[in-house]
Amino acid sequence: MRNTLKKFVTPCWKPSFQIEGRNSGKAGDASGRIDGLWWYRDWGHHVNGEFSMAVIQANNVLEDQSQVESGSMSLIESGPQGTFVGIYDGHGGAEAAQFVNNHLFENIKKFTSENQGLSEDVIIRAFLATEEEFLSIVTKMWQSRPQIASVGACCLVGIICSGFLYIANAGDSRVVLGRLEKAVKEIKAVQLSSEHNANLESVREELHLLHPDDPQVVVLKHNVWRVKGLIQVSRSIGDAYLKKAEFNQEPLLPKFLLPEPFDKPILTAEPSILVQRVYPEDQFLIFASDGLWEQLSNQEAVDIVHNCPRNGIARRLIEAALKEAAKKREMRYSDLKKIDRGVRRHFHDDITVIVLFLDCQLTSRSSYQGPVFTTRES
Image 1: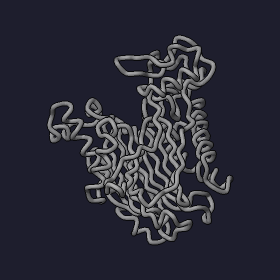
Image 2: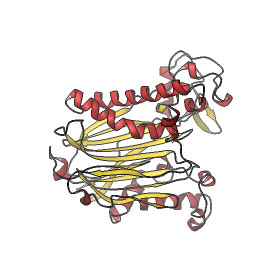
Image 3: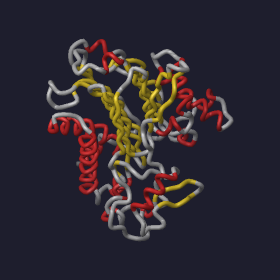
Image 4: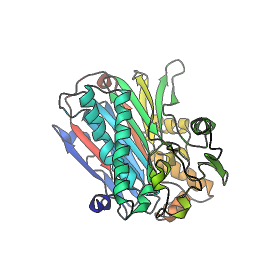
């Protein structure tokens, strides 16, 4: 088990991905590129159109993980064809995000095969199965690596399959749709994901309803609302110390220990889910970890994608966010670029962006003859 975890924790990060199937060269810049704190793949094809993805590191160890999978959505080759996007924003370490990156999609394929189709229930089962698998690692490593109990990941998933869009979110990453409003000939930003950050009043209300006997389930600490005064999100994979009381004790670090025992999980891994048809007016989707949305509004991001070339658009979005972060600190972007990982976290978080362009004709097809591939930043 130590060897399993060791590959999760690296001093920095390396991208890994594979291109499989026929005509794999058509997948675009298949190899991705590393440039300092950047990893990016400026352009590629997926089952339903084109995509661009990029990552900028701010933490000592990159805590964001992401993937784009295109091809069969089940374990059988004749299964439904689709595109899967996953963004996993880790906190407390990278282990949970990297575990999800390696297991969640495989669980979705497994349950899609068993269920003979994709559904909300399939996605929820895959999230909860991935959670249980990770918590089993926490149990096995509890005595040797108790820190693993305080590691978690926000998980945002988007799936396009058979003309439908499935969005599942546990945490505060976000997906925004760029939709053409024909009447005014403008691209409107439509947020599709529900977020689970305690700074939202609706999330605090939900937590109070779930824990009516715990007036301290959310606490305002340094002008930020936090669950039990510790964490901002109410849903995640991992964070075992807030889900099972057996992990909220020594040898866990004192800062994570709750003064009172609890008998039911404070956080949940069950995602909120949206399912809707993909319409011809739907132009593109922007998936991004919270680091982007801390700097840019939904409409600002959509306007950038709409008004700029597709090639490299994910990097362009991150650069716009970095310029805004520099502006807030009254410094030049050129100076921010010189700051190394670790120290850079004081200016912005890790940021991951995946832009998925939608081709209505491809999206409406039930079968696909192009390349089957997987692209992961890990």
